Length: 468
Image 1: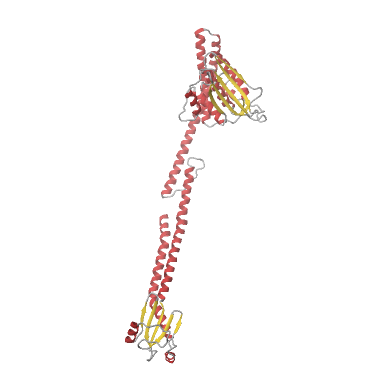
Image 2: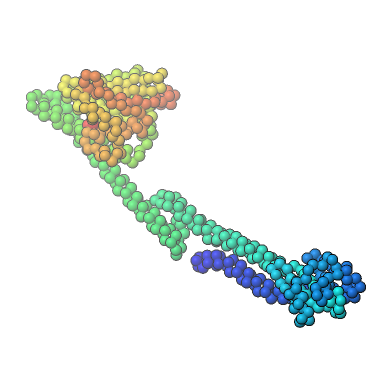
């Protein structure tokens, strides 16, 4: 149907112009003889032989492009204004005794015998060829008809073909950009190529939505499963942790060494479970800045928590904090996990006897904080230290397992909380990791919130941070 409409729009004006031109040309051909006869009859009806014989030297007349004068039998005119008569026309007219006509593209000349003899025996007339004027008008009308037909065809093509086609293409572009999104506008279907594209887009949207919903359901199930595992493992791991602390504190010899090794493994398992839980939350775009946390209280609690683990590992843990509260925008559980991973790394990678210092200071007149974790362990090679600045939590090349996961969680929490993280090898030995960020204004931080991380990580005596 649309193709038939397109053909009508394109060919209708062209055919109309062609038919109009043919009709005009046919009419011109039919009117030629009539025009000539009418013109000659008009000229001859104006002839007065008596007036010509009475004043042959002045007889004759002009009317625009039409002239008429009298001549004798040999072609001489008594009127000095008369033009020369054509000899051939004169001869043929006097011989045949009838009107002889010569037509040129511009003019029509005729010679006819008159009544009587003498200076008015032959009449000669001339006028503009009316066919030339008619032809000019015909060509003008034909050109106007052609131009009008082309304009009509162009307008019809735009309104009935181009504009609807563009509207459909724009609709397909909008639908293509919204495939898989909630605001997807289903494009109208039709039995043509664009309709097939619209149907493909709709089917693709349905498949993408179904795949995304299935993936979201699977991710939610995995997250719930992982959270359930983490919850179920906290209690037995905490019990094992407390029991091993008691055994490690009272045992001697090989039993003391074995219990401390087992205690380190339990701490690793506890922190790995917690890191996996927090990693799942981060991968689902949890709002890291949905709460506030007091870093002073956080550092003091971590000092107590890791002091016992450090003592069993032969590493002394100490912290320095300001006397006032330092509130920053961050989810408490994620903030504690980020700092705890740094302290756990410093203890795990230190050597006996070693030291780990946690320092919290406020700079720029209380506008920013600086939290440092420093150890005097063997440090890191230069290549490994450079890689710490490149790896990201969601990078394709970073699919951490074990100790590296905790450090990447720390970097991701810091990034989303708008903190900066820096790693610096100390001059002699050891490593310093520094977190820096903005501090909440005192008024906004005057209300202290409950710490939901207490519920997730167990009592403060449990070193629930992870390796790395």
